[in-house]
Amino acid sequence: MTTSSTGTPDVDPAVREELTRLRDSIDNIDAAVVHMLAERFKCTQQVGRLKAQHRLPPADPAREARQIARLRDLAENARLDPAFAEKFLNFIVAEVIRHHERIAEDTAGDADRSTG
Image (cartoon, rainbow, N blue to C red; front, side, top):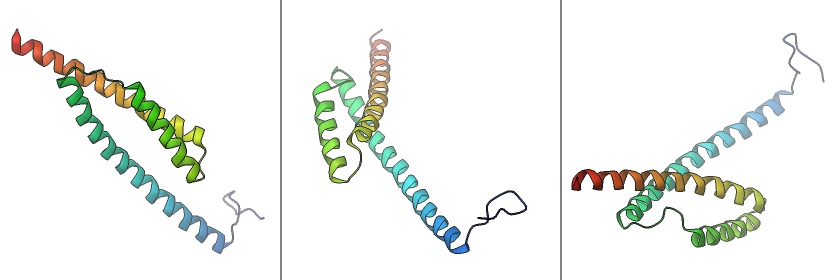
C-alpha cells in the first residue's frame, strides 16, 4: 500500500466505497439504537412514576434477573456475546433505577409540600 502526500494510505476506490457503505449502515443503526433507548426510557419513566405513586421500591431484583436471563438468551440466538448483552442491560437498569429513585424523591417532596 502506498501513502498519499497527506500521509494517509492510498485506498482502492472500491474499498473506500464499501467502507462508506458499511459506515453509513452503522450510522443508521446507531441512530435507531438511540431512538429505541429513548422510547425505552419513556416507558421506564412511566413505570417510575407508577412505582412512586404506590410507594413501590425503585429496584425489582427478581424482574432484573428475569430480564438478564431473557437478554442473554436473545443474545445467544443473535450470535452476540451474552456477557456483553448482560453488561449492556446492567448499565441501562442502573440508569433506570437512578431515574426511579429521583422520581420517588420528587414525588415524596410533592406530597410533603401538599400536606405541609
